[in-house]
Image (cartoon, rainbow, N blue to C red):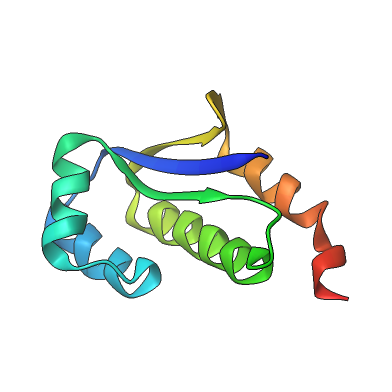
Amino acid sequence: MSSASIIVRQPKRRVASIKALRPVLGLSIAVLGRRLDEGRPIIEAELFLNDFADLADKLRETLRTLESLGDDYAVFEDEDEISGEVLINILEGSESYRL
C-alpha cells in the first residue's frame, strides 16, 4: 500500500501557518504546533483506500495552503521524497475513484 505524508520544514510565520492549516487538517492548535516545531508530518495517510476521495481533496488543499503561505515543505510517498506536483499527478491519475 502506498502512503503520503507532508512535513513543513520551515513555516514562514508559525502562527499564520497554524491558523490556515488547522481547518484543513482538523488538528488542534497544540498538536499542529507540536508537529511544526518537531518537523513531524502534518498529514500522513494511506492512499487508495475507501476514503481516497476525501483524502485526495485534503492533500490537495494542504498543498495549496502551504504554497499560499510560502512555507518550505517536503512531500513523501512512502520513504521517497517527491514534489508536490508529483503527488498531485498521482492523485489525478487515480481520478477513477470519483466515478
